[in-house]
Image (cartoon, rainbow, N blue to C red; front, side):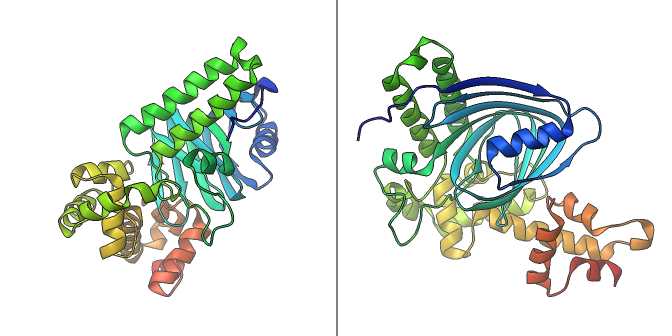
Length: 326
C-alpha cells in the first residue's frame, strides 16, 4: 500500500495561563471524551506546539503544577515521551508511573483511564489505529478480537529513546521545507507508526514473538519476577521493563509467564499487592486522627477515588470507607 498522501495542514503554538482556557484547549485538541479534573491553584501556564499532518499529529505540551483528567473511549493511538515532570496513569488494570525519558502509551482505542501529571512537559504523537495495522501488515477491523495494548510502558530504555528520536526527527521534517512534499510526510507517518509498534507490545505484533516468549516464560522467570515485585512493589517507579530485567527475560516473556501461571499481568500483580497494602493501612488507620480513604489510596498509587472504591469492593466485599471506620 502506498504511503498516505498528506502535507502539514497546521503548525501552531498556543500559550495561556487561564485555567478555563487550558481546559477548553485540551478538550478541543484531545477530543470531547477527555473529561478534565483538577488543575492546581495558581498559574497553570499551558504552552503547546502542534504540527498537524492530517494522518498524524505531533505535540509538545507543557503544564506546570498539578493536572488530572479522564479519557473515555478514545479512538486514536497517542504515544509520548516525558521530557520533564511526572505522569501517573490508572487504566483499571494497573497504575503506571513515568518520569523524564520514559515513553508511554497515553491512549489506545477503547481506553478508559485516569491520568495525573505534575509539572509536566511531554512530546506526543497521535496516529490512527488503521495506520498501525497497515504498517504491521494486519487488519485493524473485521476480526473477532480488535487489537489490544498489552503494556503502556515501552520495552526498556532503548525503546523509549527510539520513540523520542523518531518524534524529534519527524518534528524537524514538519518544520522545514520537507513538509511541502506529500511523499516525505506520508512516509514520516509510517515511520512513526513503525516506531510505536516496535516500542510497545500490542496484539498487532505479538504473534511474531509468541514462540520465543513461550519458551522463555518459565516458572523460573516467574519466580524471579515475583520476588522482585514483592520486594519493590511500593516503589512508584516500578515498571515492566525493570521487572523483566530483574527476571533476566524480555518484557513479553514475563507477561506470558504471568498470564500462563498467575492469570494476570505483571502490573496487575503489582496492583494486587498495592491494594493489599492499602487494605492493611485502612485497617490500622484512625479516622479520628484525620486518616482518609483518599489519602491512603493515593499513598499506594490509586488516584481515582471511584475506581479505587470499586476495585476494593470487588476484592474485599465492602467499600473502603467501611473498613476505615470499623
